[in-house]
Image (cartoon, rainbow, N blue to C red; front, side, top):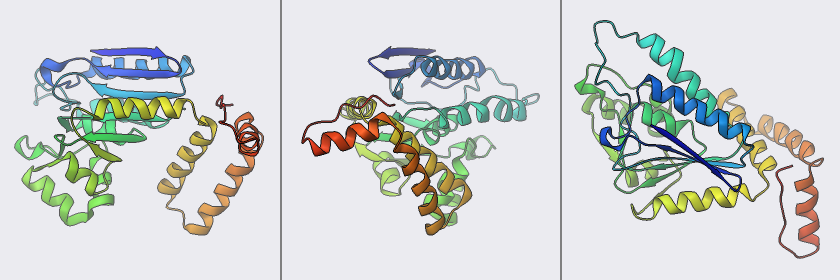
Length: 256
């Protein structure tokens, strides 16, 4: 169900169960985590996550789940949350292609990705009203932060799904593109990032996570930015970037 291809410093991970809209069972989630581990061992400098067929990921595969003995804590706390944490901490810029259904765990996979490009026809929201369940995988935090309490609860109570255009306009993800453009645009962005100053990109990734998680104020943020910039002064890419600017040529970054 999970395909990994590594080429020229870019890992491409694809969910390959289109007949069930790439919904994920426990085995598929373990395979997805293993793909991220393998991509890290390969030393890639960017990663793209996508789904095959009509949807990115419709969420958990509940076709064989018996609600009478469903171990929700074991599933969410023992499998899903560690996977999302692992994805968010991946040591390279990560990108995702969001199209069709992006729901439940599928939405969580997007939340755990650095940059998400969204197709106009994407469907994003909380469909759980019809299941007697609630939004999970980080959805509450994302919606509350970007939409506020009223819009968050409106989506949850009604089960209404946002289009890709609406989701991006609301600040949920990076940018919206036509359905026939989004995959190539995402791949192009990942390739470009892999050729860039990835050590500096990772510094920014860590800064964004720390400022967000610790809710740092402006001047606290400036102090940790200063420290990050000082650390980058010792990298090959920092020296190469300055040299290329001074010599009026294109820099050749190595990620070191």
